[in-house]
Length: 390
Ligand SMILES: [Zn+2]
Image 1 (cartoon, rainbow, N blue to C red):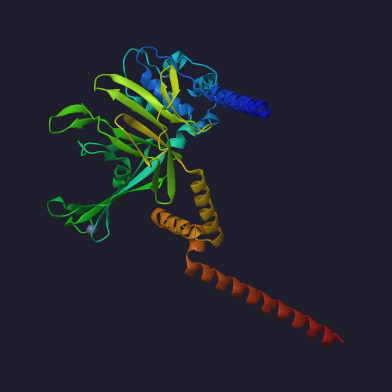
Image 2 (cartoon, rainbow, N blue to C red):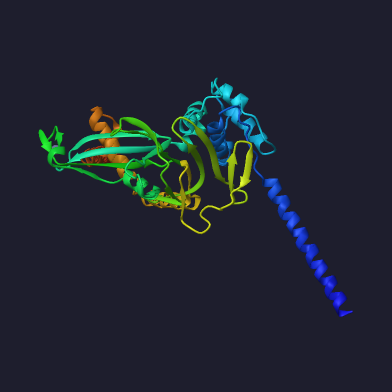
């Protein structure tokens, strides 16, 4: 009796477990990603499209009215949610005529960002300012350049594992010039010691790193492909900005030929997937599950997304700054400089110059005083006239 009840209980338990498993399978099935057919050698395009598909931020920004590639991307993203798709219309819009010729995935991404409406491409746009200053503090050179992908050179790391985190930090390191490398400063009118640095002045929402596996070797004066191992960190930090990894485009093979795949993190089920043309499978090894960095010999483009919590914190800081009026100071100074440069006289200049503004105050006071004084004399005169009549 007892044993039969126990058996029944066990059966119910197994039934429940089975049902739960079925439900879980259904969810996975539902969220399963779909692949893209290869037209010949279009794996470079498929990999880029898969990482863009995994960037939901761009989906709502695609403008169906625009004459650009937006409409085609929108269509393929809608279909990709349900089944494996072809990319014929995309290659046609991108004017890729020879689909049997392998191309560079980074170039392909650039091509798409060039052809997409600006509301989409602006998500990827960052700006770097390079400044060179002499030891006296004179600015020798300053330029600001926009970027969609930030290239990192793997050249100096032939054997060891290349740390992407260190490579990224190196971009912003100060470089000193002295001795034979001194720089000419026009203000000092001589060659002086100098420093140069780079600063990210505009942070992209989506930060793409380009690990330069295809490069030029000046020793052998020839192109090369590097298969060196890179440690891709799950997070990147710069100033008060934090980025989290969510996708990679991988290249395996040689300089002349090879194959591209994508490894993407689904925002829906927080699972990493391997996208190999029409085959999409859950990654065997879930990246970053146990370590902060993922070692790869194939990672070529790495996608990072600005941490939402972090951007909220930054926004809040800006709001606070605006409330206490700190932010207006540099703006005013910039405006003052602008006016000084343009040499124009206008109301802003008066408002910005403390001396002028007090002059205006004094004038206003004088006018009020004289008007009041005159009015008083008129009143007294009227009273006197009235009294004399009486
Ligand atoms: Zn100088």
